[in-house]
Length: 265
Image (tube, rainbow, N blue to C red; front, side, top):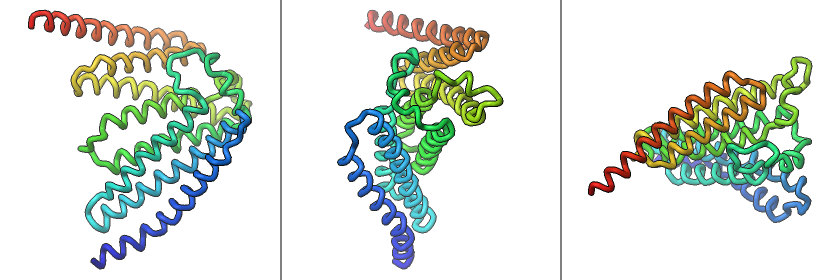
């Protein structure tokens, strides 16, 4: 009972912060600007705050695990919901499009041109870290294992669509004030796209050979190829294409084998 009381006292600080942010979020949504650019900027701020909510829920559960030797499942569930909300806010700003030309969402990027390269990079890093920490907090045997692949995938797409690709080449010039943030952001995008492609390939292998999983993996590879082409990295683009072709051949062979097996039944 004493440990329980001490736990409640410690997490009350988190709960107070959660209440403040939740009330702020509700007010911000009620007062959402009608102007498209102002609305987009407001949603970026909402994303930042909602990610903070996730962090507080993780702290609450980890405190419970340390003091009471059990995870706080209620806090973790709320943390998962806040991550979904953060992803949704950002998708409404930069679109959830994966392998498409930048021109398909350039109008969205034009609305947020005032957001600096450093702020963009830090936000996607913050979102990615929150997802990783939440996944760790749920534990290795969580029923949400594969759901986190989808969360990471959505985060990777946001990272890709959030960067100012129109000016990426010039921003990667060593003399550009945006050099460091842009280079790190590009590196992160490449890392995430490849990682998610591998995750969906793994899910395909381990979770029932669902066709959509390997298809999604291939889509992430082609999104990666598009980034290489935009950056003038032709050789890397060709390597990715060959890898995608191998995976497509595997998918086609598996689908053909499945069809033949179904006919024999």
